[in-house]
Image (cartoon, rainbow, N blue to C red; front, side):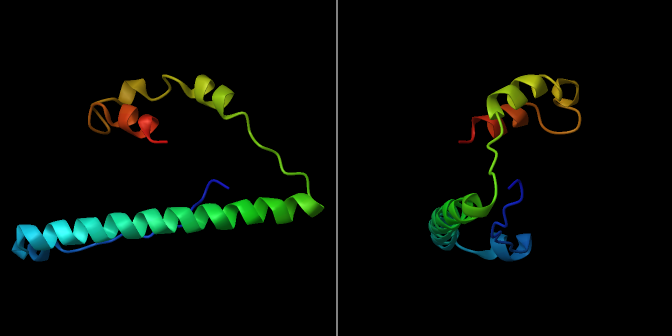
Length: 95
């Protein structure tokens, strides 16, 4: 269950830069609405998948808290080197 196929929206920077502020805002809003819809639908599908699998298999829910605790600090040495400073905190804050 670690792989989720999410839609990503791409546009060439030249095209993006050629858009008006209003058009950019409209596209951002539409992308957020589409993303929220897909997240909702994916949640519904995944809930059904676990129900279906649970009828024939043992579904194990990992202890995420202990995994997060064990990995805490594992990437600190890369902070500001391999990625921008603060990125791990931003990712960790996503619910």
